[in-house]
Length: 245
Image 1 (cartoon, rainbow, N blue to C red):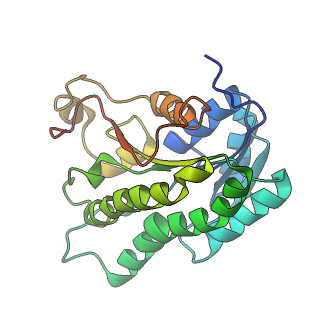
Image 2 (image 1 turned 60 degrees about the vertical axis):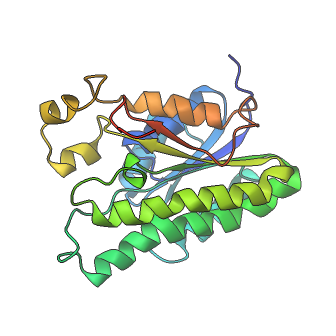
């Protein structure tokens, strides 16, 4: 299937590895012109070379104003951004008693305000061109809280409301906004959480971890011309792990 992405300009945040890398690599395969970013200059340049991305930018999304500056920089370099994939690393584990105020603030900037900044910077151009795709890569923790992921559980749940609200505001301009909620995938982040793989897979009906490229394929479809009537949705990709519906 031709997804109609040839020549489309895409920016993928947090794309040096894991789900962000897989999403950006799939967009490159579909013919999009792709810019990627992460805070590590060496890793993001290496990732861009491996996948064939057009532009690699170093940016620390935990700093206020950085996402806005990043989007504006890519718009200037590429002549616009048609597709924005917002993906950030997960905050540290911890119970409510142990998470510091600084950790809450950093999580809020990284998970929440980076999205707000990205939307505010990218939407005007998309609305003018009457075409745009915005995808938020969040987590199933937005729907079903995970143990000790207190910051992630709290902030990601709120993003679902933001997706629905903003999608309704911009739908008439040909711009779609959707959330993607991955479950357990074979990424560095999963290794950081320190949960044994067999313990995880035994709780997943599919009896395996997700492959990053499977999520990348979903992101590419939501970015496509064919997905123009899908907006304001939060799609779970978790092998059946989540028990609700």
